[in-house]
Length: 398
Image (cartoon, rainbow, N blue to C red):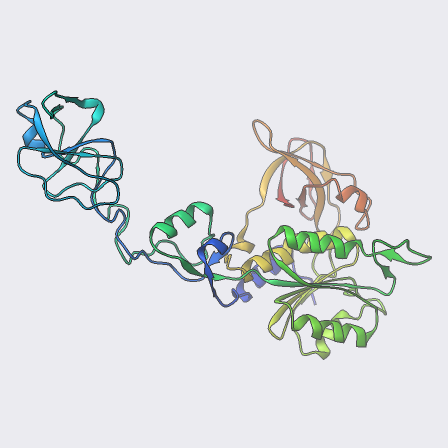
């Protein structure tokens, strides 16, 4: 079977992944989530005609004579005023309600108070310095759309419109399973043939950085029963299961067979990319599985291009896989003579007149030293022969 291309595989997942069921949260706890349902205003905004300035509310036709007018009353904040008597004005302040019959506010800078308690006002047009009831939105108007990110400024809108709780898509729960009998905790000194579980630490950090909730972290030996039990444990705790190692074609690459035995539906296995060729995605019960290769650069590429956007789709971002890579000018020549798309560790920086990218000299998918200095992945198309100054496209890592 022909290997899937990078773009085809991402489009395939984009069509398959649905957001998690919505939950109700207090508004104060909802920042960073995406809306699962459109909240609606319970009042008009503004809720009444209000002044935009400290000054005097009046009838515009009363100002044309140039006469000083009596101040009938003052409108304190938070109170509804009586109707304005003819031939008089009312003292108002920014945000206070305009009395009925008034159709203009004259700022206090354009007012001349008189010693007898009257005030002479500049002649202005109707509607000047007044915000009309409902001019921002009317009651029952949707304030945002499902999938919109709840930002601090959206909180301000939802709060003033009375949405004390909102229905949001929860962040996905993530299980991180590092497979391999050779793995030891990073706090231990590895013995002969052993290696520290740096992938597990990296994937937990990446999940936390993405705003996901890590609910299970485990190291699993290359044994069928151990993997079977680990997946069943993860199913009870996670919406997204991310594994590293065990997805290639070696005798101890057991993840694909274990998933088959558990009844998983494999979406794809093996991609025409470098690094990351053995990558696997599957649907297992109510969870998604992304099986990453065990080499650290491959694991990072697989997380960035597949696990992270899949998690973002679960969290309500329907366009996570529609992200457009950013063009940048190469600082050094590069080539891809192979038959797979390269996703090379790179350093991206914003420069004038265009962003620049330097592809780092990496030694292979095991090169954790070089990838630690990368902030982007630069795409090298099959057969590409590029000179310094040519444009490539980049996915930023963070």
